[in-house]
Amino acid sequence: MNRYAHSFLISSFLYGILVFGFLFIMTKSNSVLGEQVVKVMMLRPQEEVLEQKQSSMAKIEEENQKQPKDESIKKIEKPKPIKNDKSMITDKQEVSKQKDQANETKEQQSAQKAARSSEAEKNQFLIQLKSEIRKNKRYPEVARGRGQEGVVEASFRVNQDGSVSNVVCHGEYSVLNNAAKEAIRKAFPVKISQNIATVLPLELSLVLDFKLLD
Image (cartoon, rainbow, N blue to C red; front, side, top):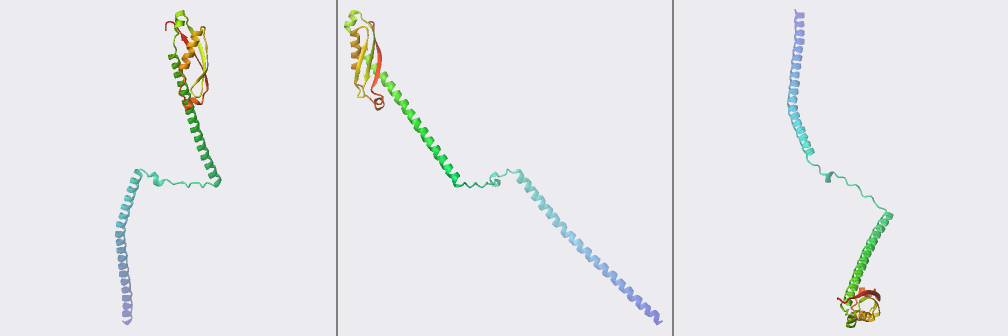
């Protein structure tokens, strides 16, 4: 009887250990499962927030791509090459040469302009002088009475002081030659400008036509 009681006690003890172990395992499993559920519940909102952030970032990147790029920001300035002394000297010489050429060009243009102006003034002077001589031409009454007419070729020198010299006239009639000389002398002295003085003395010639019908 004692042996059976002793066996029952041992069996009951072992059974109790098994039941206690089973309950402990079940309790532990439920705890682990609960933690996993909590973790899952905690992770899901975080994943949703992360997805929202990623979606927002993607939208921002799309908007940035649609906007015009600021080239001034993205432009990378290239470092300027450092010039050595020789290249700097060469550049200075080139600049100096260009300035000299520009000055020479200006001087040439000024000289050409002055020459054109002087030539134009000279031509104007000659035109006015010959016109004045023709205005002074008088038909001699003696020649008119004799019916003498013709062409007189005259030449003379204009001096730097505005006077006239070396007056020579060639025509058929001496009376007309003298009338041509008188017309030339009456036109002088003339006013001489600085530009005209540079080309004097000057030999000139002109033709005076004497006609009875004039």
